[in-house]
Length: 208
Image 1 (spheres, one colour):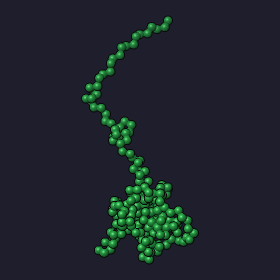
Image 2 (tube, one colour):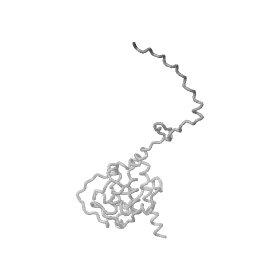
Image 3 (cartoon, rainbow, N blue to C red):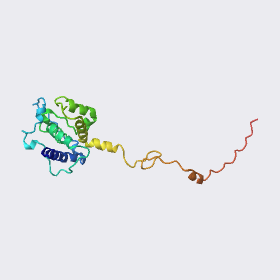
Image 4 (cartoon, rainbow, N blue to C red):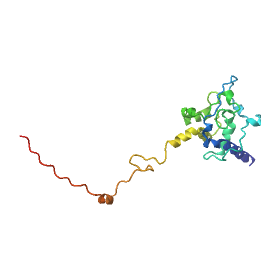
């Protein structure tokens, strides 16, 4: 019971931190471009937040709007908070406590989002890549949901998908709703005025 309550509390905090991604495009262009020289291999133990100061444990602005993100389970949100934010940050911009040192990828960068597939993101989470360790202990369904969460990091990508199907456009031969026009009924065709009869062309005299 206590564990379930703690899980929901952590998930609620992370949801409040991530929800503004759906409301503002300012998060898309953020990130850290520092290139520090003190680099080392990223280990799974780096995700132990017990000894990290409170300021580095993902404090959430209480004024953040919203308390829910549809389509994401609490387990997914907690998995992101515990395994990813130390390097990628709460919003995926690579600005976590260990992000600059390890040159963590800015997951909100539209160029990066367009350069990888969902399958590649899932493989990187499960098998590791470069300095990133493997998280194969996570269930496949959680990894799949983490991929969805990563895709939410780029508002520009969401806006592009929404703009791909504009509402109210009129297709050729269609209506404003996009539905094709119905063929005229037999009764309406009968009421249409008949075309005027044309006089026969005069006979021409054959040349001599």
